[in-house]
Length: 103
Image (cartoon, rainbow, N blue to C red):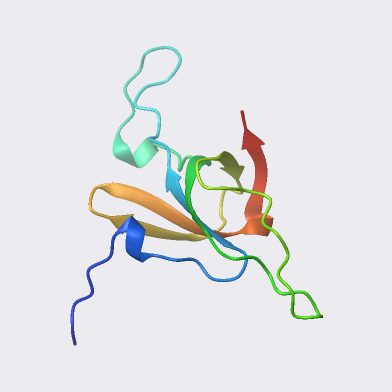
């Protein structure tokens, strides 16, 4: 089996999929207690790095995406597929799993 080398620039989402770089999780609590890796929760905020062309309508045209590259988004906790490229973590989501654009 051949090995495939992936990078952010080589991943192009299809249809209404969005490729999101996950923000770093909190290292310590508000009270200053350091959290071990096993106690950290998966972050739900990230930056959009790639956007698919949009979902096809019944007439064959594409529906425009609501998010753009560079948007900071809040997404569902258990949504998407986790992908690790190098030391960075990404999530491949459907556009419907994005809850909000964070300003």
